Image: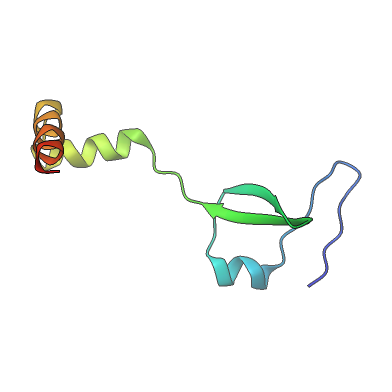
Length: 74
């Protein structure tokens, strides 16, 4: 598909491309073999993660204990 770069270095992603990769507000931009590669990035908000942990009754101490346990297993 063809898209045009504006004078402000912006492009519009074709709808079919967005639909096939899933919608994302952020993209990781890299160059591979002279090609621009956009990879959708889905960012989770820290507050929502903390809220989920709180609802599950998981405390920061529980997380530290779990990490210490996992490290001891290797």
